[in-house]
Image (spheres, rainbow, N blue to C red):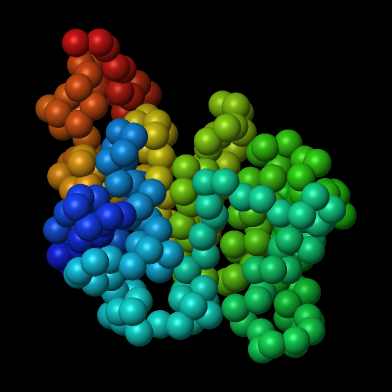
Length: 256
């Protein structure tokens, strides 16, 4: 569904940050990008989303180069929840979610009955019915994250990008968000690409994994084919072991 071919990207002319990267995102699956800090995870996601332009190479979505897509067209294909999201202090959940309908409207066009139905569906699906009139910035971190996911759902895109969606959340809300993402994927065949730091969360909630190191994708594929101790030792410089407990694969890290 999404293909990156011979992708290169630099923040400055002297240093290549993404280096000759070739990966493919499978339709209807959850793909997680893993790697240590500074490996290029979020940068790669931003290139997929059209927020950063590669210095060479290309990204295609359903066979079309993102270079040929206007911003509005791209927003109809991809919804993105960023790592850090800020909104005016007085904006309510419902008002925020309505912004998700923007890519489908003409300038100065009002909200249609269809927009209303989609917004109400997105709010209900993320469990925010009782909070829809509440200020987004007054809510807890987990509630705010659900509100931004609701806005992304209102775009009615086939692809959802999540850049470190569990950052700053306690463990309860981390699991809550990841369970929601997996449910959305399974219910509507939503293609999900997310950046995570936690290896065990990536193992549990992903179908496929891309492992980044120094701007290169050194491994990609199904979780059970990619994750092994040799790879984790090489990428993270840690030891440990991988075990299976009640049919769940668990990675236990140990200092070398």
